Length: 292
Image (cartoon, rainbow, N blue to C red; front, side, top):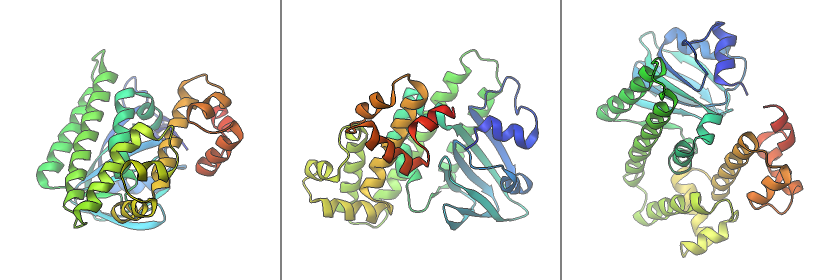
């Protein structure tokens, strides 16, 4: 995967803003800019949010074709391959891109990732339909972040982090309302939301579905069925994604050994942890740390 800064410099040859570190990127996108996605050298180590202001675009993402149009928000997960199949002539969008490492290393944003991003990024369809008011509100937050990005404010990074957290919380609230009115039975909806509430607090120590089913007074089979019905994903996919994010954060931001990280996230030994990490990421924990 390529960092935002490396991706941008490889494509355009110069920094997007003066004194730019590549932690955030705010872009007004037209048809030509959208199509340039196809010339990127690889996948990007970043979280991305695109709100369509006008027109439509057809993407191939995560193995399937997705069409986005006015007042749609498309959420991009780090490392996922994406290509643009078609874009209307009048296409316009607003895009916020945030560095993966910055996202998981900043405490307030890391908490927002746990409680807000997971229901968005692990949806079966990573597209959120917005009302005109919701779209305008989220766009105003992105544009405000863009203003701070080019400012000389000595607290620029802190302000960007706070705006990013507010954006995520607002988006989470929008998604929560949509879930509650999605047509699933109230018991199924409540069970899914209660599972999502439990997960951030317990995933480090509890890796199995049985703990969450017991805590919610249902059988593992019932919980698994409810989570898949609402989200299109399994309980273990949610747990494993959070464990991977925690492991990446520990590898990138601490000097803990592989053995210590395995113990920190409750794996029996480094070998078991290494197998998990390789299955999820395609490299060993040691190889990942060396690549930083």
